[in-house]
Every structure is written in structure tokens, then in C-alpha cells.
Length: 302
Image (cartoon, rainbow, N blue to C red; front, side):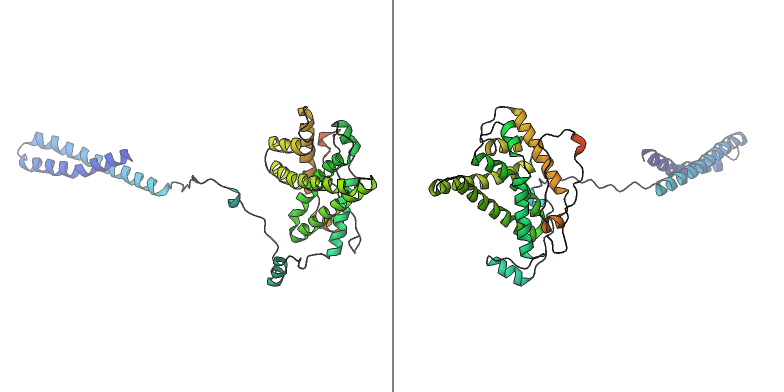
């Protein structure tokens, strides 16, 4: 652009020189030698003017044809919070459903409620029967007690709750009965073990406080990095009694891969069947985590 400005300025000054030399030619016609010299000079300036005109026209065409790209820089000083993140779309419900759910009742769901209750019971059964509790007791030196069993069971129940809460209103309804089945099972096991009613009531109170407190810790850990998840496992599963960091590392890896494993299962199948599988505590092959097999169920959802 600086070169273009110089050329334009130089071109604007040429007519003044032409007028000056024309006056000199008129006043010095009696001098033939000077006239020839001035005439040659005038011709050179005219040639220079034509060249400058061509150059200027070429520059103008070049500037007009070359377009600078319109770039937008996304520069902002705003700090994004959880409220700014896109939320998953919720299931649309009618005004009647909103009214009865505001009163504490459950409105119509995508599937029959009794089917969802059966699926919830099956999912909790998978948390209890398809988990090798003996391996947890031996590898982590946990005491073989009802409370230790409950700490391991509630971890698997929490992972199921995390998965089913992604399935809208039907998934949340299923979560309620998974937790209900857990407390019924804990109370029944206490009776089978011969624990008196008063001691069982106190133990259930402690377990309930631990369960609802650990849910917040696990939720924070699964949404954060491994340090936060390891801290939650150390407080809740190990009851602040673990000096070996390798055990915490193993449990963090176990929780991460189980959540990923459950996320790969279709939500429709989980709502109808409730069948889940679990990865082993120690993987013989780290690359063996593949898409799980789909559960089978009949037309009635059983």
C-alpha cells in the first residue's frame, strides 16, 4: 500500500511538470537545440506517465481481485460453568403428568411400571450375584462382615444408578426400586445372620448415612480426575484404611472400566431386562474390553 501511495503521488505531480515544460517550449522556440532537448525530455516524461498509468491500473486490478479472508476470532473472557454446558434433552410430558408428579406420584412411563420394577430387581440381583466378593476381600484385606459386603455392593449399585439415570423418567423410576431392593436385601441378610432388631436398626442407619454420602463422593469422582475418584474410594470403600496406592489405582481402573462397560449397553434392553455384566477386577488383557453381548428377553419384556 505504501508503494501504491507513492505511485499515485508521483502520477499526480506529472501534469505540473508537463505544463512547466510546455511553457518552456513556447518561450524557447527560437532556440532549436534547447527545443529538441526539452522535446526529448517531454517525450520521456510522457512515456513514464503511460508506464505509471499501466502500473497503477495493474495494482488497482490486483487489489480489487485479491480479497482478504474474513476471519473471526472467538476471543472471550467468559468463564464457563456447569450451567453453561448443554444439558441432555428431557422427555416431554403433558400438564397432567407434571401435576401428578408434583404431588409425589409417578405419571405414565414409556414401559409398564411392573416391568421396570422387575428389571430393577434383576439389576440389583446382578450387582449381588455376579460380583466376586471373595476376590475383593482377599485382594484388599477387607474383613468378611456384612458392612464390608455392603460397601462393595453399594459401589456396584451406584454404577447402575449412574447408567440408568441417563434413560429419562423411566430410568429414574427404575433407580428408586434398585435402591429399595438393596435395603430390603440388607435387612433380610441381617435377619439371617441373627442380628437383633436394635443392632440392625443402628447398623441400617449407619449404612444409610454412608450410602447417601458416598453417592456424592463417587459422583464428584466420576466427573473429575482420578485423584478425586481415588479419594472418594479411600473414604468410602476402604473406610480411610488403605496405605497401598496400588490398591487405589486398581479400584480407580475398575470403576472407570465398569462405567464405560455399562454405557455401552443399550438403554432399552436395560429397562426391559435389567441384565448387566461386570468386567473382572484384574484384566488379563487390557485390550479385551469390547462391546458387551446384548441381553435377551421375550415379547413381554421378561
